[in-house]
Image (cartoon, rainbow, N blue to C red):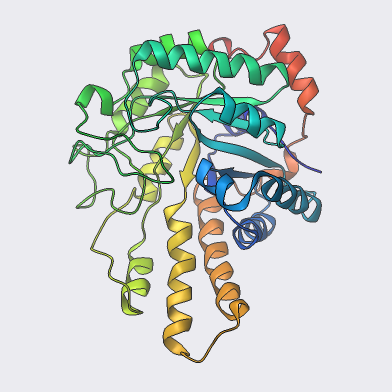
Length: 354
């Protein structure tokens, strides 16, 4: 078994100057596509499940699926991560079901729609970090609210997304506040707001500095060089995937995602985890539509799923290589969670001192 905590994986990424794509999963086919790509290029893996994915697949199914993948690919370290936890109960139940890492999204209240106060965010994130660290699990926090700098609004995905208009102060993480937040919460990784958003419809044009504030990442990294930063909503929404979907009966309006070169810029400035979901959905769905269009008599699910897995595998392989993740799995020696718990108790993993 090769399950690893987020903290250990991102520490290795920081030491070796690379980033790790975090792919959302719901089913076996997505898991197999990720692992086949990882094996091809010797890359460690972050598989994450949202509350929606946990509801769709069930915690027991997810746990056994990831454990089976770890057994099939023992040479690949896998972090099993809870994405956008909304309260202590969600995070603690994830850990009980085998997740080695959790995100406590205290930027929003428990309904995952109402922007939370800074004080609320600190209090709940610190409680989750303390709880998780007792057993050696890692914690990602979020400061700032994910949303579009063009519209001032957030897209909802799997039940997570702020409602109403957001201010610029909410949409961009304050670097000085980030220092205070990390010190008080003791999170292992910090998700920041810089203009990225959930879903496919992130930008109405190729993003520049007015609508994708990479300078915020650079400013935070200068103040917190030892803290692992996270970019959410970072699918690139490739044009070729839009074209496949629309050529085969889809109706996606023209849209733009986060350019891979901007993510590479972020990795040079402390970004160690990059969340990707929409691109994987598009890669698979494009193949579903293509097969259905090419052969209307087809009814065998495998005839749809095999090319869909191949398309997602190709996408994952590209991100592993572009982010510098490739070639690093073999050099990681997995530390058991009980050993990580001891290190937390000793204070040797305090991110402020890193």
